[in-house]
Every structure is written in C-alpha cells, then in structure tokens.
Length: 367
Image (cartoon, rainbow, N blue to C red; front, side, top):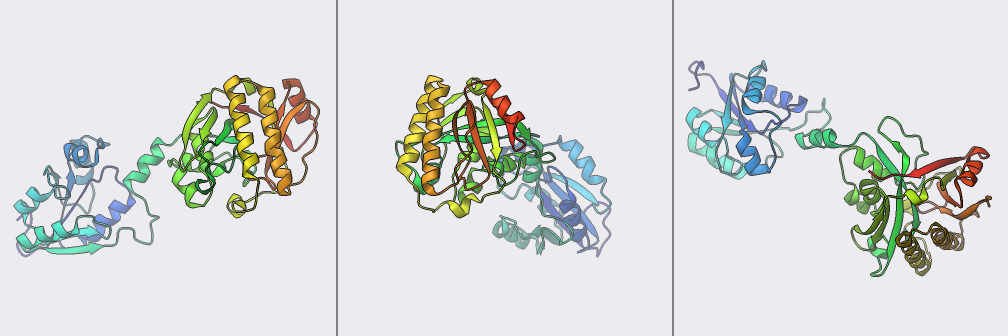
C-alpha cells in the first residue's frame, strides 16, 4: 500500500512519458483520479526516453517530478526505469500493487499491460485520450511546433513542373524551381492564396511538417515542399520522391523576377489529370536545368517560354507582353494564380512593377 494511503481506498496508477505536459495530460490525470481515491503517476526516466524513443527529455527528471507533484489531482509521483518496452513502470507497479491501471485508447502496449495487471489482480481501465472540450494534441506535435521555422519562402517554377507528380515521372526528366522572398508566416501572408506559389508546402513547414507526404496524398507533386524546405535555385530529378540534382544560391536572378496576379485562384489537384504535352514539359525542364548549370539567365528565359508554350497549347489565356521580359509563364498548374516574369535587367523589372498594380517584385531566397 503506498505511503499515506488508508486501508480500503482505491489506488489508481498511470504511466507515460509526460515529456511536455499539456491540457490533455491534465484531463487524463483528473479522469484517472476520479476512478479511485489515490493517484500515482509514473513517468519514464530520461534514460528510458532515450533508449525507447531516441529522444532527449525536455526536462531533467527531478524537475519533471516536482512539476507533476504540484498538480492537485496527483497524490504520488514515481519514475519508471525498467528496460522492457512499454513496461518501464513495471518495477514500481509490482512494488505498489495498485487496484487500477488507467490507460488511453491509443495505448500501444495493451496486451503486456493486461498481463501485468493479472499478476497483481489490478483492473485494466481504458480512458478516452482526448475529451471533447480539448483539441487533440500530443508531445510530438508540440515539439514540431517548437522546431518549426517562424517564416518560410514560397516558390516559382521554371520548367519540368508535373514531372514531380509520381504518375507522370520520367527517368530523364528534371524540375527546376526557386524559393522566393518576401517570406510568409502563419501570421503574415502577403501573397494571394491558391496562387501556384507552393503555399501548401510553406504552410506545412510552418506547422512543423516536411510536407512531401501530404502533397502526394493530394495526388499532386512534391516540388512545393521540397524547394520550400531546401531553398535556393534548385534542379530536381523526376521521380516518386524529391532527389536534388543541383542547387545554386540564386543570386543570378536577383533583380530579374516579378509576379503578375491574374485575378483568379486555381486548384492544382483538379487540374492534375488534364491532357497536356509532357514531352514539351520534359524539354523545358532539360533546358532550364542546363541554364542553371551554366548560370545563364537568357537560356533560363527560353526554357520558361517553352513551358509557357505548353500552357498556351493546353488552353490558358495569353499573358501580357512586357518590355524587357526574356521569359514568362503561369506558376504552378496555371489557369489562374500568379505568372512569373523574367527580365533582362533590374530596371526593366522595376519599371514593370511600378506601372502595374497587379505586379510585384520577388527575389531568390536561400537559407
């Protein structure tokens, strides 16, 4: 019987990492405590957390113990040091012999914990992990939020777009794109939404995700999260997942790029299976790759125009002619959103931006 626990009282026991305490833990402890009269919380030691999850503890064990002991519904705190996966608390459990072991619905070690309960005659009780009054959250999510960058770039694509979609991938194909500034954040997003600039990839990064898997699940390609995460002027090999072929910092494009808002958003997933000339897409990608290798802006402009010709053949509206431009195309899947323009000089770019309310200057971005 735990120290201070009167006879005939029901002793409840819970265990977990509890590495970063959040409201879900508080509610779980409260519900567990309501099952009896005395609650023992066992948390995995720093060594156990490293051995079993390859993760350093957010707090030293003594700090975590003091924090848990300060909670009004917790009567006792012990530390699990066992080496069995999922049963680091076993030694303390056998010593204290509680009446109830409370777990959450997503507990991965139910079978071995039930066997342990049978050893001491304890009841195995499942509690809902996330009560309705709280939004779901986990320690892993909190860690991702902490590690996530505060700002992220968007991107423009120059050639080879669509060859990043796995079902359209070609062995000798390339995708060329560039991360751009001004940057965006969860609180400040100065570009139009659904605009062909890879906003979903940036949004995933800002929320602590890499983003490739989520894009592929939408049935589109991986180039947005890939270049937003990598940054720079990048050449990628076509394939089921991103493989970087070559990268430049992008300074050769400084002062040479602008965006033109077409006035209407677009939806890439709905356009993915539309008929298009993938041979021309591959040709544009190969030309753009060589231009990046040679650091040749004029050649990159020609590659962009090949991409644009494919877009016109697909049925997209003609983009305006602009003095000093050496290339233009719709960003992303087109049919709306932004169009990227490449200029022969910074003065030509700036003159275009100054004379058009729907235009804005952008610059390459490398982290």
